[in-house]
Image (cartoon, rainbow, N blue to C red; front, side, top):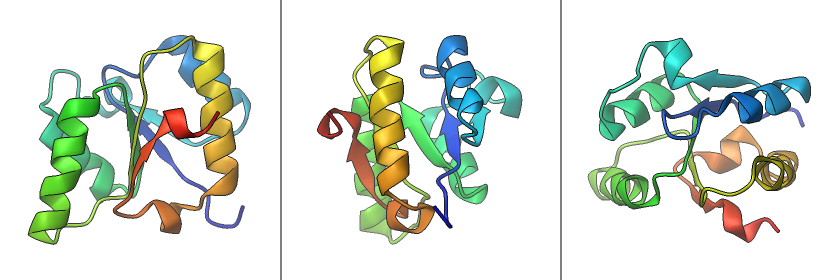
Length: 119
């Protein structure tokens, strides 16, 4: 895809096996640990991801659905949010790859996506 999604995995989602599997498939991934943002509140995680044009991937559904709603209400932009239940890594990877193959970074702008929709 000409406009691939660059991912930012928050602290909850930055499982080593997930990061390795995505990178093995040439997916651009940055983790909260690599960014030096471990322990930083979710709102700041989203600010960082937006500033670096990265779609955030998280297992923290409640906080990020709320943040997405606040961003829309306040007219602020983000580069997309993907939320998932904590599932087996292979299942998460398969679903993420389907989504990443079907959507562009431009399509993810200000979009909240539930990974459970990508079965």
